[in-house]
Length: 421
Image 1 (cartoon, one colour):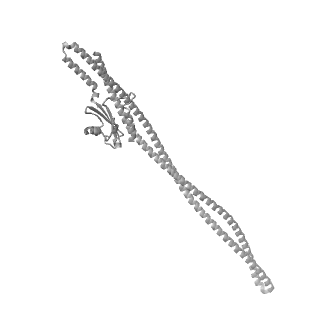
Image 2 (image 1 turned 135 degrees about the horizontal axis):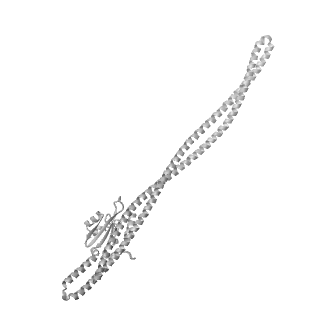
Image 3 (image 1 turned 60 degrees about the horizontal axis):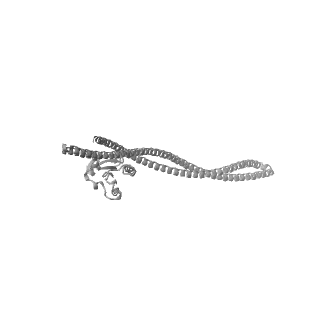
């Protein structure tokens, strides 16, 4: 920020230096200096003395002026110092209230330039008085003519000098006004740039908030996918367990069918034995009647066992069909659960990718927001410095205007003297 401020100020400062196209031309002996808070020259008629703090040489203000003058210039805001026949007019320009660095503009003007017109007038008046007192009536006419010619020459000299001073002051006033207008325009531009950067910073902050919300949503989605993934994995395990139980049930039903078949075979054999026993009991006559009754009961029981075995076979057959259907459904359920599990894995990976991308967006937007805030702070410092420069330029233009008015009055007095002569 300090470099930007220095470049802007030096550019405006150098507009007031000598040009070849009719701009200000300093009188002989007049100099304008620019130093920093440590007394190093930033602008000097002798280029070898400039930028000592960067070029590693010790050309500073204390090399050319006494320690008392250097202390006064570096320690006060503004002032005028008389030094060895010169006037040193200085004023300090701060970067910003928060920064300790500042610049000092020094105008070195010989006393002879400041009081040139007045001294000429004093000399002329003194000569007139001396000559008037020295001359007497016998030499009055002759000396009067000589004095008139001398006064006329002096008045012409005063008039010419005041005209040149008036022209120079007019040019200085115009340049100072141009500098003030340029600084004001730059300040307006920096204000607009500050507003634009501030708006961009607010937009970047809003983008950060939106990205954080998106990140939170992606994290919630990732958690939901993880829960879904756990549920699908549990479902797959349960479907596999059900399928295994169905297989076990099918084997047990098959074993029951085998047992039912054995019971049916035993019932048939028992029925045949009961029938044979009835025949043998009939042959035995009266002695075989009791045995015939028992054989008949056994045959009835074998018939009931046969019917029960047939019912069991029918039920087992139905159970087997249901088991087969359930096996097919469970296999389809297992396939579906595996497909759902794969989809859940892919969805989880996709959410992880989205989460990483959104997280990068959040970090980038936070960095952009931070950079824009730093730019806003820097521009604000430049605007404050430009306001100070603008105020100084206006005060300079006002002072030059007052000097021009005084010179113009002196010019009018010289014209009146010329008419009187």
